[in-house]
Image (cartoon, rainbow, N blue to C red; front, side, top):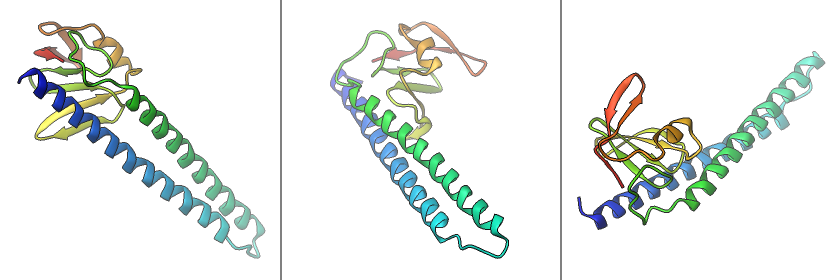
Length: 155
């Protein structure tokens, strides 16, 4: 793969991450609205505690989804700050680390994704695994999920 192709590929992965985070944010907003609506629609019954419990559950769900939305927004902000237009000699934020079976992209914590048949782990720059990978170069060995992986390329 040529240098311009590597940069193009990393830009494509970053765009994929933007779309996925956007979808997750939209889903979280929808769940917040549903939880609020459920809490609002809970009618007072003759067993007064049921009313209060239902409203409380709706508010707890809304709070949980609000926290998720905030995490997604933080991840989006981190992703915006990642520079993928640079080819990195060693693993760092914005780098793509290629191993024989899997690859890592240090940009956003989206977990394991399958893109064009390739397993790619999207890591937040703050993730412990990203810290373990930091500074690693092609030819070095890393340990991941009890696997010993050889780094083929970093860019």
